[in-house]
View 1 (cartoon, rainbow, N blue to C red):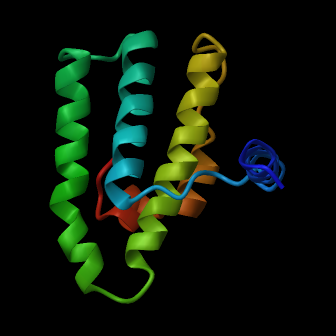
View 2: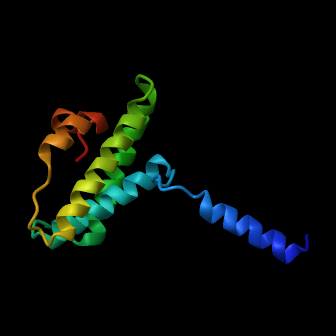
Length: 124
């Protein structure tokens, strides 16, 4: 098989087998995504009190501050926080996508994140 065809086969295989699962981001990557979603929500729905950039930086710093504690505790604590971040992203993006007409599903966040965001050591 010539190199061009081999490249095409590999490309088609990668596209076909890409799957629909969420990307495998690091803890820091998920914290950046949830910070962007949370600050977009606050900006669009009228609760942002600082600049968007500052909002995102503050959120990322808060998640970074609790990461060592999550890593030291029981196995799965960090994964539980990532699961919470993913649920928050889903909820916040749904609300901003609706032009702030839809409400956040607080019951879902409570179920995934725990009381007062315990899964992420209280980081919202």
